[in-house]
Length: 102
Image 1 (cartoon, rainbow, N blue to C red):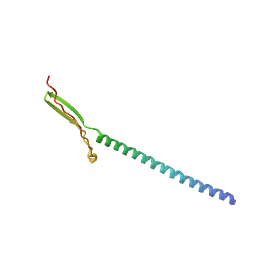
Image 2: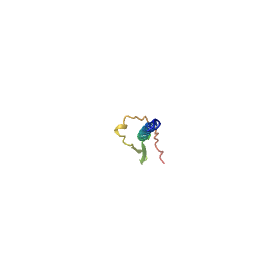
Image 3: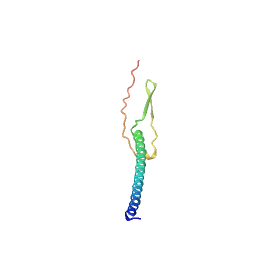
Image 4: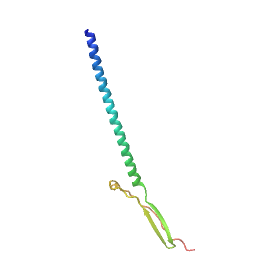
């Protein structure tokens, strides 16, 4: 084989190896980014659920039992232990007035 042909074979081998290495690195990086996007979406969903629980005010229902007595029922969702560190400062300002007799 002539020297030029040997050089051509050598360069083709080196370029093929370099291209395969580049494609492998691109595939690995793409997979890592996809995993990170998936983890970020999962974390965002978890944080959104925590935020919804913390910011949702309790459901309050007033039941009239007679003219002079009202009963109050408050429904609150149970907060999972990992979310109990989030505190909510919420104070309902309910003004209770006695109804006037008829």
